[in-house]
Image (cartoon, rainbow, N blue to C red; front, top):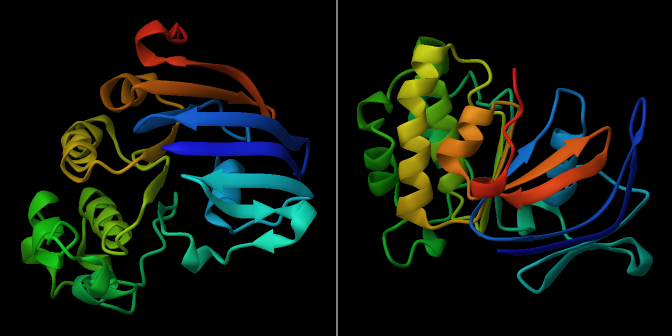
Length: 226
């Protein structure tokens, strides 16, 4: 991916998100403590927050330019987003959730078909079930599948494993790795768990109090001691 963020300024409750950042690569971790501004950064990229100032460009396409009053609507950015709360619709079945926003015309090679994505994430048998009937790990996979079914150009994952215990995290990590390798989508992966960074990502960007505190290949990253 080629993601450019310049003149970013977004006032938050206790500080402002302020940064200039260039991101290249496939699987990029956004790492930092809770409340550092990681989710707000994803929201800006996705078009869900209005910054005071910002220039955001992805693969040559300008998504936000406050100086020119450019703001591409979130639904037109080609971005798949899995938020922390998953945002699944409890009144719909799993299959209805999956088909919400599905772009059949964007599936020219079968890669983003319902059949292929549910096979990759091993949720073929869940289609008729309700959201309340799913385990935590199943909900995570359904939310990820729904994001993929929009045929995105960029995938944003916000703490996708934070609500799971260690055993479930160990089960879901291979699914995330398979998505990374199977779909070749550029991915921004928000976490405060170093193990997830080293297992899934090739570059890490550290954020603290709304500012960039570091950026390096994961192979050169000094993992924080807990």
